Every structure is written in C-alpha cells, then in structure tokens.
Length: 162
Image (spheres, rainbow, N blue to C red):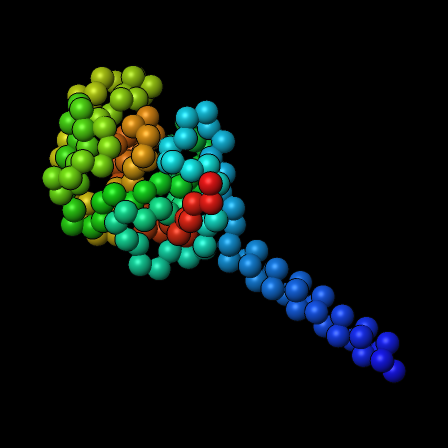
C-alpha cells in the first residue's frame, strides 16, 4: 500500500515536471551569438516569447527579413531597441544618435554593402509600428544599414545570461 502511494506520487511528480518543461519550452528559447565579433556584450540569451510593450533600451529578439545574403531570412537576431515610434534618429559618418543621444558609431561597415559611409547618413523619424535597432558593437549589422524593423518581426524580450 505505501509502495503504491509512493509510485503514484512519483508518477505525478514526473508528469508535473514534464508539463512544466513543455510550458517553459513553448514560452522560452535560448539565443546564441556565435559570431567572431558579437553584436551585443553577451553571447547567450534567454528569449521570452511575446514582445508585449517594447521599451527603448531593452534587448529584444527579432526575425530577420530581407537581409539575405548577409543574414538568412527567418534567423533570430538579438539587438537593443534604440529608437521607438516618434524618436528622431540621426546617422552621420562618425556617430548614430537618437533624440540627440549617441547610441552607436557611424556606419563603419558601409563598404561591406559596396557603399561609402555617406550612403547611409540620414535623419529619420521612427514610424509607428517600427523600431530602430542597434548593437553595442559599432560593427553590428543593424538599423543603420537596414532601416527600421516592423513590430510584427519581434520574437520576444531577450535576457542576457553571459
């Protein structure tokens, strides 16, 4: 009788543990930055699926779209949201500012796209439903080159582990 109760309790714990794991796996994933030069300061992120309200300064995962051949469509990119709708972004040869505050360097990788830095210098207002994304590394492939990113491409909030 006692052995039966222990078995039932053990089986219930296994079922609850499996259900908890499936719930976590459905709502969270792990993001890895395996590039030689990282875009942000960390290499491993926990991504909580679902973006909710997107905040300036937060790290978020977005799906790549229209960046081939440099980045395969559908790949997950983790970047900092530097500009939200209504913000003014100014990109010069030496720096990138949002509302007058420096968020990154200038478009140092312009040559990778076959252009000089002047091609990417501009001033823009971040439109409704879009975001301006940057990396902490000045050599990050981000909105300085690709433009603003649609909210629908947001996968979730990214939390750095290390």
